[in-house]
Length: 453
Image (cartoon, rainbow, N blue to C red):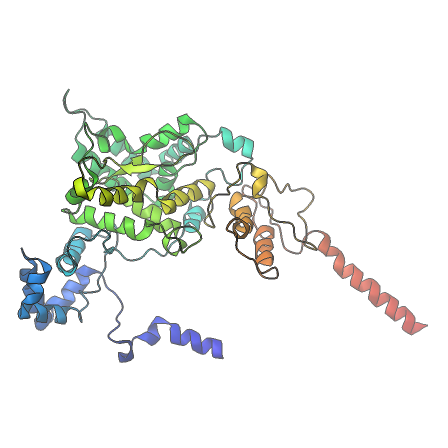
């Protein structure tokens, strides 16, 4: 009863009373604007605030009593907390409404800006479930090492009409030479890339963008996914802070960059290095920047060393060099992003890839008195790494595991796994433990015999 009471108190429906200091469920900014327009006080204050923000800095605006009054009214309206959905029908209009309020409410130019998008609640495991194909996970390590997963991803895209159509479109546009001095129309190329990554499901786009590679040919195909000669590279590299400034003049680019920082900013407080341990949110934010001035890409064709960056450097930064280097490191040395890409390539949404280079290093710790695998299954080839790394994560991070809780959880995840590519299910009660009922019957028979005597 106590548990049920606590759950009801924690549910959103129980938090809608006046005791929550004005809490209200968020709405998208287009809808919030409609609600504000229907209320005369809100609509007039919104017009006033927009005039206050036009061409004025924050301190000048807050010095004006009329501007302060407008801000106080809008802070109690749905406009203040509104958010947008990436790919929504009126995304640009929604973002324009969001930034019309939030641009002037910060202390100058912020390094990290809040994301205007709704938080991502889906996980990589959801994409794996939809795709039903893991990039090498669960396969024989020898076969997996010889496979070109990026080529497999392109073939899978061609089997889907929507993916094939939009991929063919951006390849055609980005490869079309305009003149001997202009190799392509970058603006049209970017637009075609945005359409591809916004309209094609992630189970196809992620496999092309984040496929795992064992050789240079595969890694080069991965680097060439976005046609970098048109969409990414240029004659000269601009300064990264200048490139950021150009990006922030566009509401869409500014929003995608803010979303990337919100979801991929390396965190030392989580096991994965990602905010809320959500790989999917980071990968989605990264893909969302492709097709804008801040388009990122792999810097080389290294199959193992994953380094991505926008097309920029920090030359000519002057006294802003430290800030520029920090901005660039959020791409080139981003622990969250690197772990997320590796996790997708390994087909796991549990933890970072194992540290050991050999496959044997990922085997689960031995637990006494636990059921073993059936005789016809090999624990080194049939189980996916996504399952095995669950068991090793506690050891790798140096955490003290509760033997009665952590190890039993690890064992359950191992023994209830469905073997990829097979209909066999390893159940917790399989193996030697099946002898236990017969032992109990033997004891019972002895007791009955003694009673009879």
